[in-house]
Image (cartoon, rainbow, N blue to C red; front, top):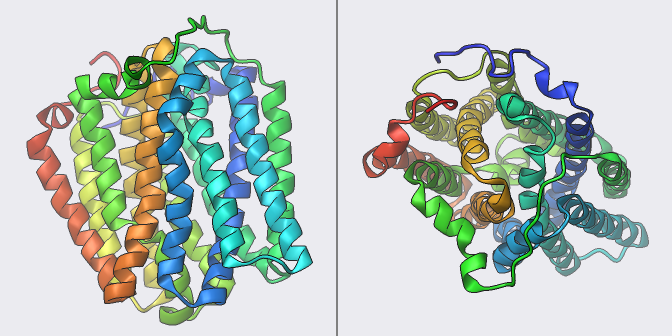
Length: 411
């Protein structure tokens, strides 16, 4: 990968700004909480039902509220104080995970209750995603924005590494321990966001209309390189995502238990963190679009390797590569969006982006669970990896503007 020093001129240039530091730590705390509860929810649901389809339903019930609210959420973010919107979303997630804790302690938690609670989390994330994306650019000057994007990705990966591993370790003491710590981490995130002071953005209040609601989608459609990047990420993870089936692999294929499940969930994030630190240190200088396409093909190949593996170490290494290649794709996509989107549209563009991300993750979990219920876990994962490789080649033909993206600054 061709690299150069980050645009801001310093490895830690984004952290010179207090608003970014508080925002970053809040993001890490909330991601830690959500990643820990994902391990507990997945293991509990599979233990209760013994059904891969029910694992997929967890993702579906989290995605459906996002789908229903995405356009409204973008309008809200672009017409209100974005920090207040983020504060409200995180507070709702705090209430939801606290409910998981209390119901588990009382012995009343059931699959139906879990589906309802993850749906509430999905509704909150419909607002959290665009608010996060809109606030990020207001915490640093534009010259430090690529560095901030890379550091935010790194922070998310740190949480995705340590969160599942910590969740798996805490699960030894029972699911209530996982939910209790997750509740505390989300409470800390809420406090940090309350203390954050991003740069003021002039807000022009607009009446709600179809043209306003759809403005984010129209903007993305007008930029073929952004549309190509977002849709490629969507369909590649939708087909190639294997995370929903990790409880099946941990228990029935690799026989590694809850602690092993936590390590498997951490592996993609560990690979992504390593790649994110490389990008944070040196940046991506040339041929960004081509590297994204190559990375998606590598993501598919690593997914196939994981699907066919029956060895825990080989499976872990394959998931490392899955995370590293996905990080390249994510960085190119996020930087393109942040540098191209006007401040007045960040909420609505962020809402559409969050929908695509949610579809690739939560809807991808439902797709994986459904295919696994029909064909088995191994064929589901392998076929998804093959699909991701095919998509990289197809998108190179369908979106030449993405293929031609060279420099992320000064294009």
